[in-house]
Image (cartoon, rainbow, N blue to C red; front, side, top):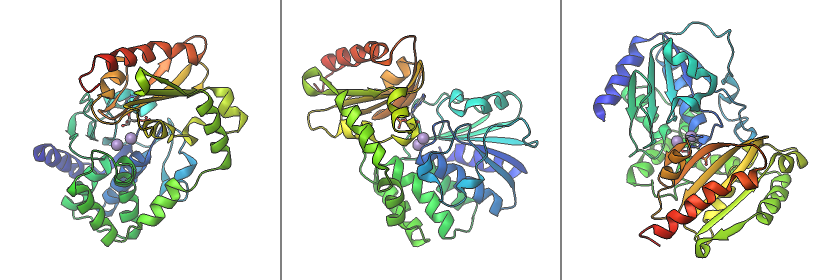
Length: 327
Ligand code: AMP
Ligand code: MN
Ligand code: MN
């Protein structure tokens, strides 16, 4: 793995104009790794544009450099290198996927389901977050850190570990987080911004999601969903309601949790979580998505209504759970 990090490092050193790209439906790790790497590369003299082909969720507004993230446009300048972050497959970068066949590319990611779609890939599922991989790379590049860079780099490590609670937490996570705090990251500010920044409408939406909640497989499987009219009712978007699948997993009997949100008629994002033994990434891959053994997702496309379209995946999980060893 060190070999691939060094390969990525030398590829970055050779390039001058670099397009750094995160994934659609950006999460904390996406924003964090995208901005940390972009700022780090600028600090060693590169010309960089950070991009994401999606609206940036309001929860990240006001964090350092977030306003610099650009969307997809055909008027972007010429680049010598495309760097893709935190993305397991090419469809995760939306319309920027087209660039993969046009300019040389580098990939930095921590998903076990990664399809190695760039010219130079550094993929290591032993890392808790892509932000942690970027931290290693910036150290190797001897990039100077200030408070803002430390804070934005800390963000992805905190969010992808569920604020240091998930099974991907090991001593290296705490060591890196501690180093970023020494460099000026404020853990309370990050936690408050992400976790204690909810609108009252999200609670109303949560009430609707609880109304749709079903428990199957002797309480081991919990699922729920919301459709576009639920989001419209409170003028909220799918991105504004990211944490509910974690709430479903927190039910004591639950091993697998599923939450589906219809962000456009006939199209839903499905989030999957498991607690100890069930590998949800296998389910996600079977339905065209990807992720980690305990946190995965995919896009469901259908005619008709979400509640009915979900039944295939619901029975898929239900029967797998019935046959799994841990049950
Ligand atoms: P989420 O449920 O959206 O928080 O996503 C959980 C994990 O699954 C993250 O690591 C995502 O990168 C991954 N994931 C979510 N949606 C998809 C998708 N459509 N395709 C591949 N991976 C996904
Ligand atoms: Mn991500
Ligand atoms: Mn990640």
